[in-house]
Length: 336
Image (cartoon, rainbow, N blue to C red; front, top):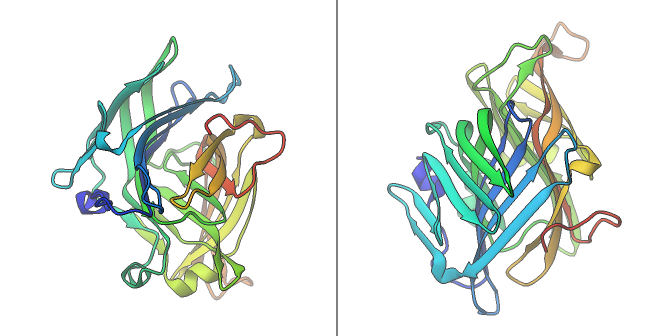
């Protein structure tokens, strides 16, 4: 099923954008890394392009965040669905790894596939084509080995955790926040491999005004899948976000999670996304954010109606993005 979710949706039509990304944090080095394989076909029928991106950040503050992007003609993009294999130039992404190099950066990553994918956009909305962007997680929880090279520094990954996502559509939202984390532990330091949370909160223009936030959230806790993605639930999930923080709650039946995400301003990488109609979105991303997730179960004997089951944390090991339609004053845009 991961191959189906990773299948390239672009068939040469104008007005389309599509991207695949791998985001990871590495306990051994403390580094966070974000690798993107992207394409955009302008709505006016102009030349489609494909790009490779690599962003890296060191939570120890040893230098500014690093961002690189290389752009090619869309002729450099090649893809097959079964087995999944995506290539831009010499760079490749498959169900078992990713490799590539350009300018002064390179990556060689490998992992065992995660056989339990997740989808943020409810199938009803996908079939009705009401969503201008679709986000899926073919591989939400990966243990990643290999290396990443930035300039003269090469990092051998030790205990890296991350995920691989696929996004396609015709237009980005006007304002959003996103997070992913699959390197969680209890407050006592007990690691919870297999647990993860991934969510996005968006405002979209409809009928001459901004609607939102709409907040689909997926995850896995104690081996049980968590899905808060129905149209009714997405509109009711509580969400409040800003440049460096996001607080949200999401429910799935008799379960609820409350999540706080915080990113240091100096860790943010600023990049621009270009919509097929040419409009820009200004995005600020940290792969070394911190996250706290409180998991609850319905309990009528509690005054609130909810009983706290456990609290999971990920200091410096969560991925976070904030985006809007204007640049943030005083923050560098590393990729334009």
